[in-house]
Length: 392
Ligand SMILES: Cc1cc2nc3c(=O)[nH]c(=O)nc-3n(C[C@H](O)[C@H](O)[C@H](O)COP(=O)(O)O)c2cc1C
Image (cartoon, rainbow, N blue to C red):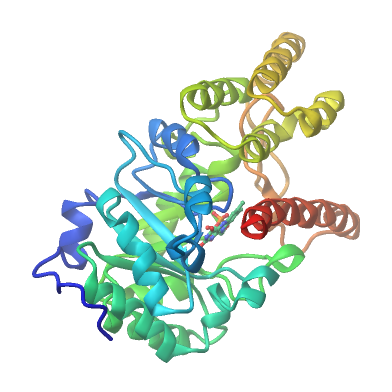
């Protein structure tokens, strides 16, 4: 397929791209709808993220001649925001290319989302719901490969059968992808069925392909990153939730939650950020303390101005400093019977819901309750995204 665009003579290929442009990065911030926005990327880079992805952008809407409002809402970058990979969801090569052309001078690669398993992706016919349409995927990737001046990458989920995953990954490589992120879960692993990611599948993909492979899934603590690299031999590791609950995960520290909130809000002062994104981040950063300071949870759900988030953070800090004084002896991080670290509630820490295997009946019940809440959170996130889509 040709769109009358001059073929690019030479762009860095796979490991050359990885070494020269991505500087052999190991720590990748995942694409996250409503959550890997510019302000968050600034904070994450400050604490060790070496490559960042934008949230998924709908290529058709982004390429639309009348899509200025959507573009302004969804796309923002600035000084220091590199290396940056812009992720699109798409099912039409022409609009994908047109969307990518709009940003190719401001980022280092274009990523195709082949992993989103949500209902919204089923309805929109993109993400993991393209997983069975290999010709279409080939065309999407190959069109970018042939017509962009920067590399194309992809992010996939695995199939239940590892040999099929490898054939799939090789097809994507042959279409021109210069780097592949493998989320080691199948399409059906979402919500309360999330469970563990399969690192063995990721290892097999890494062994079979000749482009850099980034692993995704099962990262709770910094040490899981090294563990994952050891077990799979991947080039880098990507985390989404690990970073949302602890933006300093890549720096191997668990800072006080108020510190991360203050720094993020300070960045938001000079980096215009949509209120739902800010609220989403503070809910996650504050999560360990919200079951204790429940009135702050209620306020967080209601406030609507940056200054109000700043005031709430001040109040949270005031209370947590009192808690720190009261519980001085709890400063040491302990480990529970399943090996999960127990942090005091004033420190950033992972949300361990997805890694609890073989839970007790009581845990099952609690987990179901949490799942309802998590599904609601996810719904809220996606409905924020949908609001933007629908307003157009
Ligand atoms: C809030 C949120 C938004 C997400 N949005 C995207 C997205 O825009 N594109 C994408 O490919 N994956 C998206 N994901 C999936 C993550 O990138 C990642 O694949 C998944 O969460 C597993 O990684 P983790 O175990 O480190 O969380 C999202 C995940 C979360 C939690």
